[in-house]
Length: 107
Image (cartoon, rainbow, N blue to C red; front, side, top):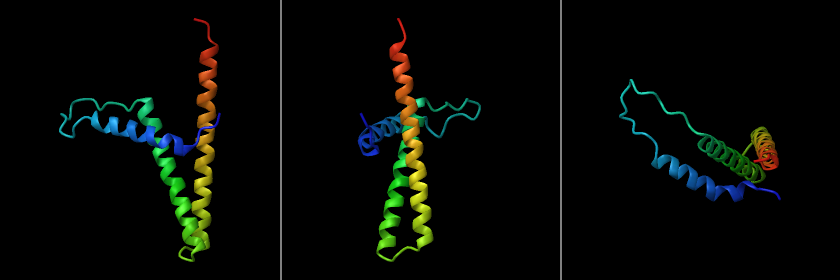
């Protein structure tokens, strides 16, 4: 089973929307501890950043084909998108591996 970033987009939007709705107000007292982001929020934020980086790489590559971007800009954007995609795949593999390990545990 493969998981593409496009398949994650609706889930990410819901997760970030829910996170924004539950975010503390900016008028919190200065002495109060700042709440830490949980794993789901962190993962959703990273996925959103990855999606935007890949989209930027695609747009720069298209602009380069139209002659609106320099070769250096295209190469930098495409390399950044490639590195981002490799990172996403590595994280996905680790999550799947962790899930499989947990499913093998005896209750």
